Amino acid sequence: MPDRSPTEIRASIEANRAELAVSIERLRGEVAQFADWRGQLRRHRTTALVGAAVAGFVVGGGVAALGGMVLGRRR
Image 1: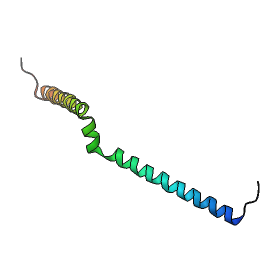
Image 2 (image 1 turned 135 degrees about the horizontal axis):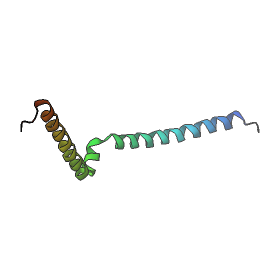
Image 3 (image 1 turned 120 degrees about the vertical axis):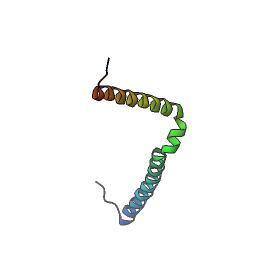
Image 4 (image 1 turned 90 degrees about the vertical axis):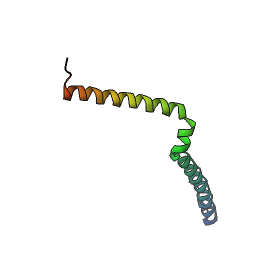
């Protein structure tokens, strides 16, 4: 491994710091975009509405079935 001068080492460290700063800023942007649930909901409104309808149907059916089991259906 060739020996590097202190100046070369400092320059390398500074270049790494600059690259790390750019990477961190990019990551912050990606995290902010991922965590924006309102934006995600806006972009996927139809899917969210269908999912909510299905979930409501399943929960409603489950409550009805449980009520029928607990209260007993009289025939």
